[in-house]
Image (cartoon, rainbow, N blue to C red; front, top):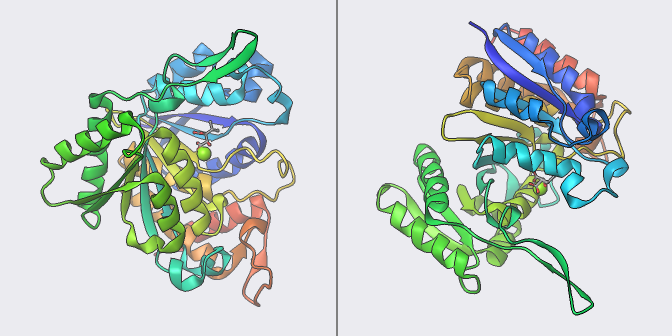
Length: 360
Ligand code: IPM
Ligand code: MG
């Protein structure tokens, strides 16, 4: 039986990269049945809404959703409710994909691409577990209104204890399978909602005596991430802090163009997308790095499809193309060495496919 996958190329480099990622998946020989759907800007153009009901319905019927990226200047002037990003947020919420896993791993050959000194990042392997369907992104009330002739904008940062406990369990589980260390990030010195976050994470800790837990305020966590990133193993945090810290963590590894993510619901269904956005400024020029989406597809094979061996093969192939010196522009060192060669999107995917064909 083949796995049913919903493929959502989206906008910008998302749409550009996806056909190459499907070529990589096809080369694996895993039985996959793809269905294609629109989300984001392209959905606004084709269906008048960033999240067509048919797209969400198809996602719910699939074992996994593989997503490129959404957004672009063409749709920037639309109201908040009509923007491409709303489609992405609606998809995450509609699938109840509350657990967003964002690994930040440094691929050894890219140590020079980091903005930090190589010794600070060599061997870096952090996992950020970001709550994805709650917090200030979704809290009500929200809006901009008029108060005595003056505009006033507001959002609500809210979590209930069940939402906190379920993301904490995911994080403790993952930490238990890694190095047994979990750092929870909050702003409990100022925000009541995150005082509750800290309390609930402490309560859930009782179920995981083998995991060491500590807590950091988000400002300190941001600082520690750039000061000494290797002190961290698994970080768990709310939606907005996770958004910010995952970009910081991504940059430690040299490029946003390398990082995959998985967003899982309670049934193991998942939405898999690169951490990077649609990068409209470089779209359509065959220069985007396809590796983050290729690695997202590997996470999909591992977490939602149970195809661990195929996932390993993809990750190993990515390792070996980097070791062979293939570089897209975003990970090309300023002074290339003899072994590095600049390639485009299609050629990078070709190299991964060629590496898959080499028997291990
Ligand atoms: C991300 C992105 C999204 C987010 C945007 C595009 C809505 O920044 O996936 O990190 O804020 O979650
Ligand atoms: Mg982000």
